[in-house]
Length: 488
Image (cartoon, rainbow, N blue to C red; front, top):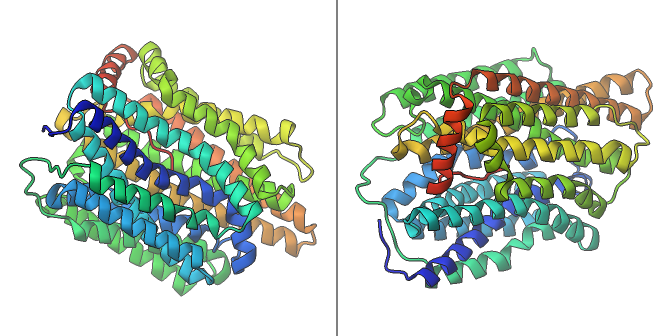
């Protein structure tokens, strides 16, 4: 695949694409800082608040693979503009939201637009940069934007929420979206991958997303309506039926959204299970630690943003080359196992934080451990997901593990938030002080998240590749620019 752009214009085009992706990355972390303010303003409960995050994650993960195939069929530039427009308009709706339903619905549309932008941007980068050396540099820039954007997001979220209001964390996307749209129209070439005649697996995307949304809804509301109620059991049964339908669809359609045959490969299957468990722990960390700092420790939005900064800076540093060097030295299994154990230790440290905790003693250690652990493990997990597949399927394999991250994060967040709410309710009814009851609920969630991360670390032992062979594959992937950096 070649383009008519000279080298200078290709790099300018990369900057435009990365600006679009940066807007998506910012939205992932910027919301966490504002969650307590959103909760207070729109009267969310502790369990329903998770839908501000989950509505986005479910549609993002459900349509990530489909977005790439839409670009193959209709043109990547066109789909990038469509996704960007959708995301920007949904951001406007989020910023103007005055009810819970309006905000959650707009967040779901944001997720759809974000999935299209992210998947198509990666395809465009691969098409614009065909030389291995240039492609490696371009993917390095993309990875830094994905990791470094988290740091900007938590700071910007704190500044906007504390100085203006939570509405502005969404409204800030409008000028960025308009600028990127105008630059994209002028600078991005109309490229399309050759030989793409696959049909679109709409049925697969809709069935799996609906299944997960029903499951999350049942889990989130289980404490209020009862776990044995007809509503909870009925929703879980419907979610299971839709999941079975999804598997049947994927086994029969000509161009499945998630080729089931790939899960016969040990590393692909193991990496995706690791992704589900790890994301369940990591998304709960972002969500629950933000609530702990504001509702228990009394931090303001800006203080929360600064508290997350060490972890995000460490993860960004790993994306700039530290992770690749570890893989070259030790292979993929050790960085994954040790990294996830460090993440589990970080979550466990939060599970010990008292109601009168101090930043240096009770917040910073967990942030540092989680930053190091996540930074060590991310790229090796993506490499493991791609190590058994043919080069032409590497993009699909990385898309599968990214989807696993989003879906695992949605389900894990729903489960852990429900556990926290149930524990808090029991303690409150027994006469415990409100702050202590809330904190003990968070402790249970953090401890459960630590167990998820520890289980994911143990699964690294099942990865088939030895360190030396994995290092060779990692070097080949680094040189070809196939490593993706992603943390939602």
